[in-house]
Amino acid sequence: MRTFKLVLFSIFLFVSSWAHALEPLDINVASVKQMMNVLNGIGPYRAAAIVAYRDSNGPFESIEDLSKVKGVGSAIMERNRARIIVKEKRISSD
Image (cartoon, rainbow, N blue to C red; front, side, top):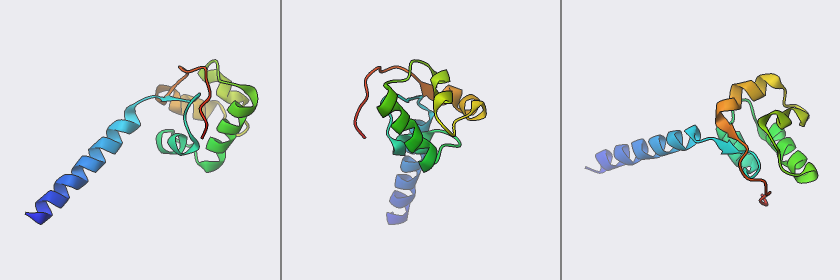
C-alpha cells in the first residue's frame, strides 16, 4: 500500500508540473526561475538578461520586444511563441 501511495503521489507531481508548463508565461511578471522552467532554450543567463532588460527598460509591449534582449534571437522567440504572453504592464520584483 505504501508503494502504491508513493507511485500515485509521483504521478500527481509529474502531471501537475507538466500542466503548469503548458500555461503561457507573462514575460512582464515572470521570474528568472519561471522563465527557465517554462521557456525552451532559456537558461539562467538568458532569463537573467530578460529580467534585467525589463527592469531597465520597463515592461515589454509585445513578444517581438524580446529581440531587443542580448542573446535572444528570432529562433528562440519563434520556438517559444506559444509559451509567451505579454499581459501585465507592471513589473513584479524577483
